[in-house]
Length: 212
Image: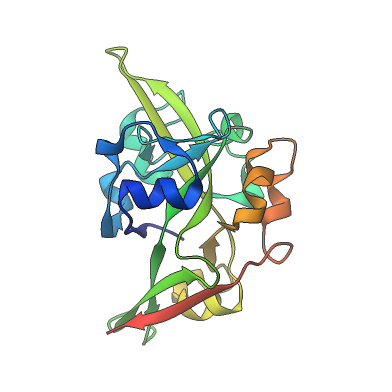
């Protein structure tokens, strides 16, 4: 799964890299370690505003029929069951790209996970890259609007199967879908089936290295 990321760039570096303006530069989160369970605002690109980097969406999609406590369950969304899950089906055609410079996972060095090695995973081609996402807008009982998103995951490739080796998830290892620059517009185009971006149909190069 994907619960921890990195976004190491300043607003100016983001705008230069993606050739897009940012809606609120003061909201850009820059951190070497971002915990999804803090429900942060990561910079994203929306299908509805593809020429802008948006900063007012928090991690953890809130479905229309739920409250914000539910978002701890929706940091990730499985690409294979997007259309089947009540939480995600209404957002299948609301696509976004989550901008990161890395994400993190832990390799278990023993069956119980008492000893773990932290891995940082980067794109082999780019210093910044995007993860596939879906999003929703929800209003609470005070009519306050919450913009939220989930990172879409797929079956792990060979490298991530080694890193993401928890015993209870054996034969069900996951990884976020990394969207290359060439494929960004294709992911944002809702006429394209999300499964076209699942492993092994789509397998961009990544590099993972242990952090000692």
